[in-house]
Image (cartoon, rainbow, N blue to C red; front, top):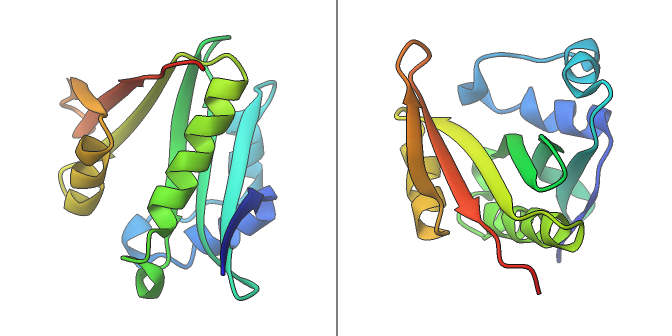
Length: 142
């Protein structure tokens, strides 16, 4: 059974660094530096006691959340791991008073682009130098 729960930065790194297409390995110091003095949400997906995916993001302010990093091990794609992580992240952001989520992706991650569009994320910008597409999704608070 797939479960989504809070994860440590070490959990996140173990998954992130095992995904070859990420091609930029992170270490704990890089994550800690980026997240210093920020409120963040760190989620992992677990299937049969194995970590299979993660989602990590932080608050830009009281209402806007930036979904910074995420990924699913290739052998566990297409079984709704990413969707489960996204749903839980959105639920937590809404429950904390968030009204907007931002995320960036790149053309080379076509599956991610399609995934974001299917989940009502809208393209709102492009960083030409870095080749990054900026998506946003307004959230409806209950």
